[in-house]
Length: 195
Image (cartoon, rainbow, N blue to C red):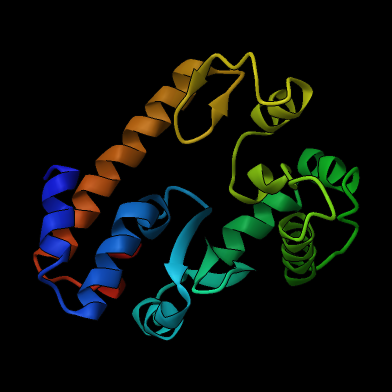
């Protein structure tokens, strides 16, 4: 179903269905268990509904940045995130940015604090967030070393290494988004379709 058709249908849905469609559009790879984390911008008033929609799944969430009416919500699979974050090469990389904590919740709090410092104009954007989104380390390093330029491909992130692998993964993400949106539009709940 084309995005414009989905957006048109969202206008006719109840609030919970509308939020479920938004989660499906922007979080399908994490809902389907092929990505460890994702970011989504939502209205602050939707947090309670999102909590209800995600309950009973293995998907956690955390507010990383607040605005007046919108928040940046970090969706993640805690077990998979911990495995990735605490692998030796990732851990070594994050320590360069001050992430010395041995607890994933404390690390996420540090990330959230760094994002808020940026929001308030007191620090540069914490580009290490790519690691917390499960991006390949070489691509995060490539982004930082090239100041976001000279990438080989751009999709869900800027790719500096293994373009073919990234293309396959991006295609899988797109396929899962289409399936997930279709399932939600047919009346399934996020809880029913989450892996």
